[in-house]
Each structure stands twice: as C-alpha cells, then as structure tokens.
Amino acid sequence: MLEPILRRQFSDPDRSAIQETVARAVERNPDYFISRYLSLEQSLGGRYVSADLFKETFDPYGESNESRNRYNAPVHNAAAVLASAYLRRVISVPGEQDRDTVILLTGIPGAGKTSSVLEGGALGARVRAVYEGQLSNPETAFAKVQQVLDAGLRPVIIAVHATPERALQNTLQRFRELGRGAGIGIMATIQGGLPDSLQLVRERFGDKVALRVVDRRIFHESKRLRGWQNLPLLKSEGDYEHIRQRLYQALEHHYSAGRIDEDAYRQALGCAPGPKHRELDRSASEGNEHTRHQRGRAAENREETVLEPTAAAADSLPGSPAEDASKTHRLSSEEERRKGREEWLAKFGPGSPARQEDRDQKAEPGLEHREDTMPEPGKDPSNSPGPDDDYAL
Image (cartoon, rainbow, N blue to C red):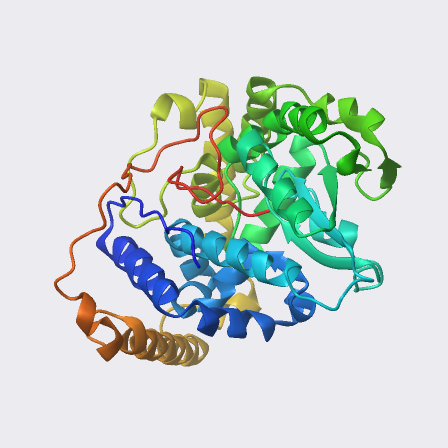
C-alpha cells in the first residue's frame, strides 16, 4: 500500500498539472511504474532503489533536460513514495537469505554516492538492496533503519562526504548534462544536519546498525572508513550556516566568471525555473558592486563571442542553410516530444478513461500547500512539501 502522496502548490499551471497527473497515475497503478523502473539499467535489476531514478519512469519529466529542470520538484513526492513502497517489497522477498544487508546511502548531493558503493558496476554479493535517500532528518532515519531491522536484515549506513564546493561543482555539471541539479539550501541542510541525525541513530539502535564513511574531501582519492568512531569526520565542513555560505560564495564565483548560465544559477538558488519565475532577491543574487562588475565583464566576453563568430560558426547564423536545417530538426524534435507528452497525458491525464472516475473528485483534505521557498535548517527534504529544489542525491 502506498503512503499518501503530498501535493505542493506551484504558481505555474503546467507544473501543477504535471504534479497532479503523475501523482494520480502512481496512486492508481504503482506496479506500472515499478515495472518500468525494473527495466532501467541503472536500477541494477531492482536492487538499487532511488527516488531520482524513479522520476525517469515519468514521461513528462524525462523527455528532455528542460523538462527535468521544470518538473523535478512537481514529480518528486510521487517518486519518493514509489521508492519507499518498492523498498518494502524488495526487503520482504523470501528465499534470499544470503543477501542479508541493506545499504542506506546518504550524503550531500554531488558527493558521488552511486559510484562509491558500486564495485565494478555491481553490488556486493551480500547486498539485498541499496536505498539512496537522505538521513539528515532523525525521524526519517529512524523509520528506514527500523524498516530494515523489522525485515530481519542488517542495515549499513554509508555516508559519502565531500567538500561543499566540489559537491556544487558536480551538481552544476549534472544540471548541464542532464537538467537535474541541486539547490544550495537543500545541500546545506543535508550536509549540516547529517552528523547530528546519525548520532541519534547510533544512540537509539546501537550496534544493530553499522556505519561506513567514504571520505571524498580529496575527491579522486577516496578513503573508506569503517565504524562509528568516524562519525565526527562528517562535521569537518561546518554547520548549516557555514556550509550554505560556502556554497553561496562558490556559486557566485561560478556565475560571475561566466561558467554557468542563468538557468543553472537560478536552480542552484532554489528558484522556480523560467519562464514564469519570480524575480530574485537582488540583494542576494547580485551581491556587491565588485560582483556585478565581474558579471558585466563575463557578459561582455560572451557577447564578443557572439558578435565575432568563427567561419564555422557563421554557417549557423540566422538565414544560413545550416541554421534552416537546424531549425527544422529542432521543430521536429519538439513536435515528437509534444506528441509523446500528449500520448502520456491521454493515457493518464484528465481526459483519459482511467481519470473518468476522478473528474468530480475534490482535492484530498489535509494536504499542505506552500509556495516555493528556500529550505530552512532542519526541514526534511524527503516526501514532503519543500523548496523548489533538487532532492537528488
């Protein structure tokens, strides 16, 4: 049985519609999406459980990098509920006594968690499942550990630890390549809150749960540490406020140097994606006069590149044959994506037979609605309303 999928309030109608359509489709037929999940190579045959990977089973989300950015937050809660339900299913499978370990994988987004637990592209022989999720909220951590223990399995927490600056660099690269980044608010909340949360896990469960720390502060020289005596290492980067300030300064540096565009900058600040986005807080987004001057210089450099194209680039100028062909290809791709979305909405959307019984149904009572905001310290970024931010791991 699924947990309730909490709905959030979005100012853009299309984001609200996608959230509701996906949530209702998951509530109606979760097995359909689990089946699609098992077909994904990254799921490792279903042994790797991740809410972010479950998002790829939603066609409106996965159709392009732009759609991943725009619909990441709207589909998150549905994906988190699916991941939680599927984990319960995996750890209750009988006849796998040799696979007695469940890894609870956690750490700041961009730390390189997935690569840290895979050995040669595969999981260890004794691993029943890896659940990738955040444990910076004690109640969430307690529930996951207890769930594993109740199944008669051995929980092992693996915390992957990187510097905030390197984690931010990795999430910005992921945003550029895949369209899914991470906001500095949620990154600071996770890394700042994780040590204290795990300390409470230790106090409650004692030796029933093991801890492993992957120290990636020197990113390509990982150190694998065993035992709870390594927990203090997770405090090495500071508390929430200190980490968030470091992340903000690093983000400003990337932006003022012209290394990232406006879309990457906005999503890292936790702002809703364009085009219908709110204005940034100018005092926070622009910084001092020196920063504004640096941004102006970076913008001038980008304009010079446009105003003085190379010979090869001239072929792609407006009106050129290459530009006409490129435009035709873009229109064709956009048309294909539009048709794909229409087919998906026809199957699960408001006009579909599957939705007919819901046409007059009112919103479920008791659901919390909030505008997109930056996260506050201590907020749980799991299946709950939160910032318009990445919940990726």
